[in-house]
Length: 65
Image (cartoon, one colour):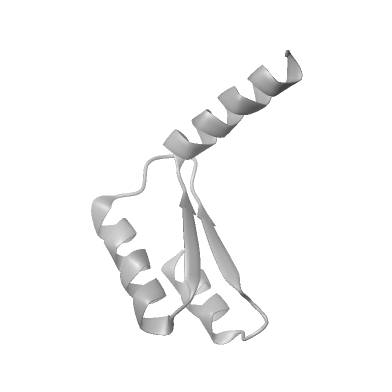
């Protein structure tokens, strides 16, 4: 995953990178991703299971309302 994120930071057409994982990100991995974003001045969004569950709940509420 880190290699894919690093490769995307070199592509100047990319304005934002999304890191998606079906489980919770390890704290060390999360810090590494934040460091890469800071050093490369790239916007990186981290989507783990917590965020995806919130999105699913929002989507289901939106459909049924």
